[in-house]
Length: 179
Image (tube, rainbow, N blue to C red; front, side):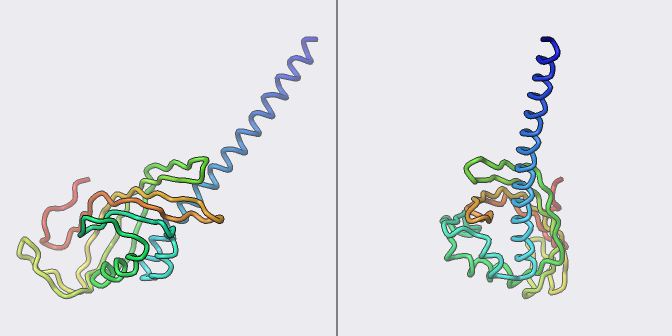
């Protein structure tokens, strides 16, 4: 009688561990697909692909505007994209995942850092320090992001989020970012 109990216990542990491994695999796949969506959005931005960028957003997407007190909506994305792309060109970017939570109901929160090398392509301007930023000048921008996505029809789509600070270091333009 002793051996059948041990055998049953071993079978139970095996079945339980297979179930956990399968759940971990599902979570890893979900995390990978969320992270791929984040990367795809940044790739579209850096390649000045407005349709690709806008296509990453859910029809009900909203977020706070940078220069207004209201919320931006999907209908505002094209103007937002064009406005921000007219003066800067992303030379390269690196994303660093900080935390991600994928919920059973198809929602996700992802928090990450972006470090981007940006070239100024707009008209020259004088910074508050008196330095002149000219076409061709490059700088590094560091930002922190929290984005919220929903899974619909097999795709992760942005439904909201925000950027916590923008730290551009144009030559002579204010103080450098704090680490």
